[in-house]
Length: 411
Ligand SMILES: [Zn+2]
Ligand SMILES: [Zn+2]
Image (cartoon, rainbow, N blue to C red; front, top):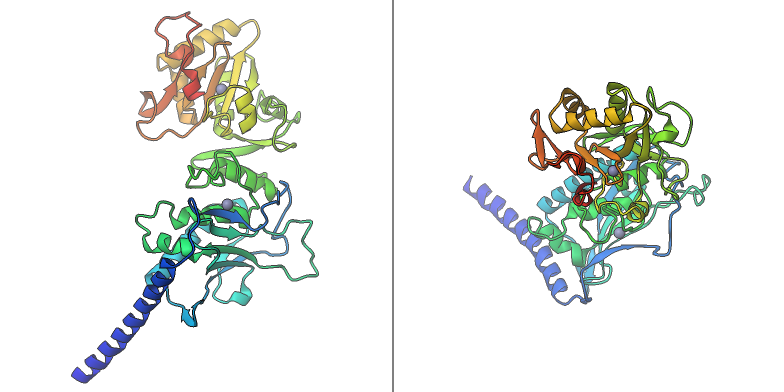
């Protein structure tokens, strides 16, 4: 019995020692690694490529199957293989699965890890790329529809993680400045959805401000895969609006809800929140007065041109600006403003529908949106719901239509 324990102990000690040796050897390699100026960043393997939205990829494959590979590092004749221990590898697998799952609804195909490299059509590989700094990851774009040849074997899309930079991200995972989940989600944006770096409110923005995928990412991803059906994202539901004469609701045609931007970033349409559309129809019905819409979805440049707020809900496809028109317009406007101000039943209905922002502009146009407001994040609370108001609603002095200095924060 004692002998058995001793043998088991020796075996365990040997394993433990070997595992530690992999790490310590890698740490030695890291100490003499070339260092580059600045923070390590993401690269895409074809920097000049600009993937035209609308190209479809993975069309030859009903599934995305990824394999995680840990490349053996050769350092002066020594092979380093076990730089990551089983806990590190478990973490990597979990985070990769979580990151793919976050994106998956927007391609619709199943995505799963496979245990054989030969079964994979996507490779997540840990390897040495270029030292500390410069590239932290280097990812291929997927083939576009133009490049795809059904007679040829599909190439393996590679998502490469530079061990020089990623090693610490994995080992110090509680304290790493940019964690593996953020890096993984960003790289998936390149490798599956063919998204470029951009200036949008996006995880693909190199400012790294956005650590999770954003509405802009989903919007672009869905256009790439032509997935125009309704979808849910972060508590909202979005529907595809085109410039057509089809009815969108009882009183509004699609073309009325369609963006007013001169150069929409995708010609055939855009997404818009169904909560906001439902709110607008409620207002139209309740006040029994025709409505003219002035502004809908605004892409980033369009929003800048319109001097919209930096984080305008129009950019997130959650907002509509409108005014009542026709002989009853003044009465309807007055009643609507009064109800929002004084917690009327129509305010309660609109909050229940999901409207969270109520604003007005100096032009007299009114604004509604269905932004997400975290608990206590609004400047108003009614019927237990946090919301935001600005412009005419918040003014004490009724009829003072010229003091609209705070809409820039909310828009
Ligand atoms: Zn990138
Ligand atoms: Zn607005």
